[in-house]
Length: 262
Image (cartoon, rainbow, N blue to C red; front, side, top):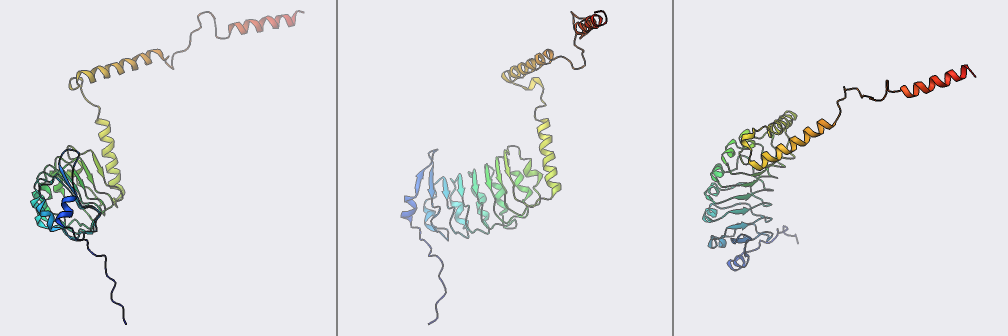
């Protein structure tokens, strides 16, 4: 008797009761629904009755699609979808105006399938797109002026738009392990060096009183050190000697004379 095809892992059904029992109070007092690592393969429709949560964690599952109904989670500030099987995201994700954190790392997202309305998330501070299949980054992401951190590591990127690199509040951009050409790497190094060189070029009038006092104190210490250190070009003086070795010379002359007249 022929054996049937091997069955895949059985999908775990998430009931409304299970979902309610997975709600916790987050550190800032919000409601967090944590359904991570539960073997979910499809977005559980029952959680659409729990749209008052502020944080939603569906990470480390096997979800392939996020429905447009995600827009019902209007209070979401934190959405974690990393380590799933997502190939695209719905345009409706752009309606989540309160979203500050979005992690879609370690999926199967391509540049083509990134939703255009991602740029509507004006309050987004952290965006993780690492470990996907991105070959470019839309220049329009430069309109997300509140971004502090962007993860772009482990993709197929050859360049990063200046509109993204120059975001006003950006503190961390992780783009490691991408096939950047050497010229791009050198350009990024030069930009970094230029930034460091101009970082401290400020006028005294632009400093607060405490910073100005500290800078003046450091400057005074530096001047003291300069005054204490003798100049290399200045010859040492010997006030008590005619020449540096005059005493030794006189002693040698005395012994020479004695040797000639025993």
